[in-house]
Image (cartoon, rainbow, N blue to C red; front, top):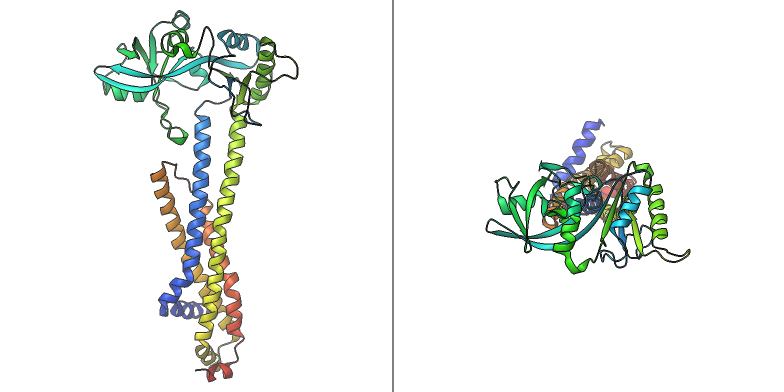
Length: 412
């Protein structure tokens, strides 16, 4: 028998029993769709975490008040943001004494209502120094950043994000215009280059930057006293310097804060690279677990193929006996039933892949997650579905090939 005849017989048997063929493929459809959707969810979560952490800036350390309570990476700090144990002078000391540092930017933050030209908008306001742009990898789209003199004197000038411009000024040029932050009037001197959405849906353009002293005294108020700051951003000159810079910053602050040997730090130094590695490893594990759970349904689909193919062998016993009686070899029968199982599995894999991609797209739209389909998803899903068909179709095919043609013809 020629291969083309084998394919013709196999496809003919599949088409002749559409309901049975659909039920046979259903398990594979569900299994492949589940694998594609679950891996998409995991990869989307990984992209969101990477985007959220990467949006803070590269080669960066974040120093916060309060001792670490988050374990290895120091991701959570007790009292972080209270502005108790860090000050302007700590930032100045880091800049002066720690090597391989390209920028140090102390900061305070708070929420405020903005008012301009009859409109209002609630946003976050950060009091920073000019080095903040370098530390956070930000650039100016129009206008300028306030300078060191303006920052030191607490001048009432601000740089705003693109969202602020859109919501309060529309298409008008905001440079030189007045913006009331809370009850305090400021002049807009610059607009940040748009960075869009970060991970978890955070709008990176919905922000106002003002001189540290002005925001601390006029906006944040009682939440930060004296020369205290809530955060110090430290940018290492190169990625390979980051661990050494973290160690040097920790040692310097312990010395400045007179912390005894063995005592707990009253600050936390978060290494963004380490946090990103830890979070990426966690999300990869999460993705693998989701894929493993979904793969179980694919194996269940394979068992379904075997059961229905065994039923098909029983139903087609006389057909098999007749074909053997007119000269069909056992190997031809074996190949035909094995091919039927593989074709049904492959068809189920194609449908499942399309449904999985569609489901992943729908979920990303509803949840606001990034759409992430791995490059290996399609070939792996189709290849594995064919393998499932071959493995679980092998036994029914062998059973069909072992039938005695005389006994088969006797059956009703």
